[in-house]
Length: 353
Image (cartoon, rainbow, N blue to C red):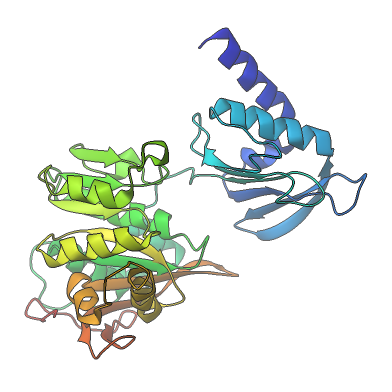
């Protein structure tokens, strides 16, 4: 580590010392410093964790938050000032997402939001054990033959065993990426030699969740390389499946779904939405923003085989809906076969349209 880099990180460490207890708390998701509510006041610290969103009562001086934002910007090779009031990136030493704001975006001073990556890798067994996915009996999954299965866990295992394409839906901070990691752990256990092409803006999937033969790429705004460009690249690198960490951009959403329609199996992604059906409609909303492209619900229904809806409730994160996509009846209308918790038989002969 160079002297300059060492000094900069030391300065960041000094400035962030007051919030370090929350950074080191495995249950903490977000650390949020708001702009001062009035001239002469400091920046209030809020923390979002498994226990909910709370005001810590800690207030940092405005100048300390400004210095912290500038030090982080320097670490990322960027600027944050009146001419560059928005900073977004990823801390290189722990992968935390950074969103820093400055005047004139904020009226009274700086703001800083740190989104911590999950500190551990969860499996489907962990979700079952915590009550987030089915009940204890749902963990007993047949490994070779599927004469009859019941429950959300069983439906997901069925999808993985048969190379179906999946969509994980949820609101912001619902835990979509964490659950996608768990799904990929299960897939890795089934097919260790599988080759995956992974596109993510920020590093959200853990190496331990992915097969060794994974090609991980990211868009590069400075060079004008988009996730849609990377999807075109993906066609030429012999993937067995593709993962788009999150559908954020219209063209990438269309390109990804078109690729699945062309025959790519065992591929997964996530999207913001309020339910399984709403996630498919969210794909429509993205695609309709692509110039010259007409939204086709049948294209979406053919591309996505299984939809999983995860939500954050007061008692924790829960898988609330799992549904097979059996077709569409026009825009905004999808035929979904919802799987009941521990009470929906699924046979090897079932047909997925």
